[in-house]
Structure formats: structure tokens, C-alpha cells
Length: 354
Ligand SMILES: Nc1ncnc2c1ncn2[C@@H]1O[C@H](COP(=O)(O)OP(=O)(O)OP(=O)(O)O)[C@@H](O)[C@H]1O
Ligand SMILES: [Mg+2]
Image (cartoon, rainbow, N blue to C red; front, side, top):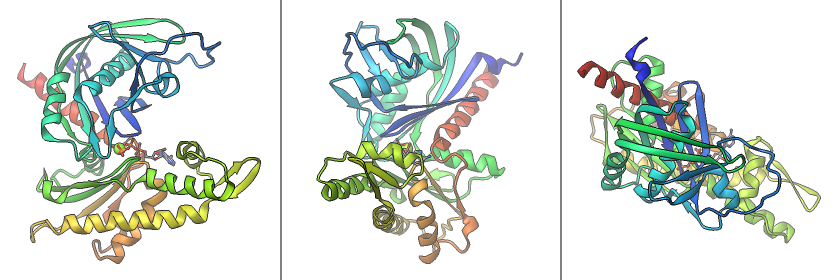
């Protein structure tokens, strides 16, 4: 058996709406929330899955609800990222511990974990997170529905922390078989922010990278406001997400059906304009010899804005033909999958040194 089996490479993408985890065939998406426990009788729970009933116990004895359980049951919820930034390395660590418990099938496991954080996250927070992840952890998780407890002794050998869109860049270039780093602008349209990352000569170019708050939440908030005005009934943005994720553009409010396609289209055009303006501004900071070969568009926003952005890139003359625009097969998971490849690369290096 290859030694690789002893080290489990994991890719984590820490988004504002969900954390994405990639380990081999297994992919997970959990809400980016931790919350205080709120014990009590909840009735007979139909869904007994670990992912939706996740509780983590820290060494101090403190307990936290994670992801979906926090979303539904915690009174106090802490978002792990907001406005394009990771909030606190300590809170994120709680979620990472829970994730390790979730994916691990043994009582002891060695890991390499590559994590992506929003682009506007400061360098100090990124370093703090990396330091927190490396080392030994006693992970204790509990399934709130069944009461089952899982204990794991985790050892993390390396924990690179990078800006989120770097994952998709790495993933796509590996998939395309590109050996050399290719100059690329990555546009990651998430829930709470659109992150733009420029890779030039294989390095992340900070002056040509940035983040704006126009993203999927801009769209759902506007459409929810429109429906509230039109129907006189309070429509929350979160309530629209399930409909939109199913690809539907009609919603039923108080028994009446409404077609929201015109509002989606109008708001999408505005969001795309904001994104393209920012891309243009950031590209102004590139050195004159930089020729951008590819634009990658990724994140859940692809489903709403992908086509319009493609057209705008062509109209603006940023690209000569549409084959310069790459959209990953799995636009939401692409970062996490790329980080897993980066974790594999670190794991191989560690094994070579032994
Ligand atoms: N298949 C789909 N169809 C339509 N919408 C989707 C689909 N998958 C995800 N989304 C939506 O896209 C939005 C952005 O998802 P994504 O996971 O990219 O955000 P995030 O990474 O959590 O946020 P950020 O990158 O801002 O930190 C979410 O609101 C999600 O509901
Ligand atoms: Mg994201």
C-alpha cells in the first residue's frame, strides 16, 4: 500500500454561505455557521444524518452546533465569514474540527488540510488560521439526533491557507493539463461577495485582486423586496434561495403565483455591471506586459450571472474569443477540489522528505 494512504489530503473552501469540503469521492456542503447549543425536546427527528446534526465539543468542554443544526436550532449564530472576509480564526477552527470529525472514519488520522478563505481576509488572519490548524487535535463530535459520539485523534502536518479562487485556478489548470502557470483572472461569485483574483507569472497579484459585495445576495435581496412590495407580505431573501437553486423562476406567495424572471434579469444586469467595472479597475493595475489568457468564472453565481459576464468580457474586449472563458463543471465545488489537489501536493512533498 502506498504511504499516501497514511496521510489524508483535504480541501476546504470557507464561503460566506457554505463551507465546501472535498476528500476523494466525498464532497460536503454545510452552512457557514456555528451556534450556541440549544438543548431540549425537538420531537422525533426524521433526519438523523451526521451532517445535519453536528455538535462539536472543544477541549474546554464548550459545545457548539455546526452548520445546518446551528442554522435551525441555535438562538445565537456566528457566521464564519462576512463581506468578503473571514471573521475569526478561532471560530473557523471550531468548524474545521467538526469537519475533520465528519470526514474521518478512523480513531486516529494524519491530515494535510488546504483551506481557502475570502480574498479580503488579512494576511495575519490567514497565518493565524494556518498555525491553529497545524498540530494535534482531539476531535469530539456528537450527533444531536442519535446521541452517538465520535472521538478522533487528528494530526495535521501542513495547513496552507490561501484566497478561495486560487483553488479553482489550480483545479482547472490541472484538468486542462497546463504545465506552466497561465496568467488568469478568476471571478468567484459567491453568496456574500464576488472575489476577483489575478494570477500572474504563477503568483497572486494583490493589486489586481479584490472583492465587492455585489453577489448572489444582492439578487435575492432585491427580488425579495420586489415581492414584499408587490404582495404586501414579508418575503425573506433566504426563502427564495431554495426556489432559485431548483432553477425555478415562479414563486407562490399566499397561494398566488408570481413570475420573477424579469426582476432576476434586471438585477442580474446590474450585478454584472458592478462586477465588470471592478474587473476593469483591477486590470488597470496589471503591468503592461501581462496578457490574460483565461478568465475563470465560478461560484454559485455562475447559475445567474455566468452567461452575462461572458458576453460583457467579449464586449469590453478583455477576451478575443469565448474559449478564453472557463467555467468549471462544478462551479460551487471547484475551489474545494483544487485545494484538495494542493493538499495532495503537500502530502507528496512531506513523504519525499521522509
Ligand atoms: N445549482 C445551483 N443553482 C442555483 N444556485 C445555486 C446552485 N448552487 C448554489 N447556488 C447558490 O449560489 C449562491 C452562492 O453559492 P457559493 O457556494 O458559491 O457561495 P459561498 O462560497 O458560500 O459565498 P462566498 O464565496 O461569497 O463566500 C448561494 O446562494 C447558493 O444558494
Ligand atoms: Mg465561495
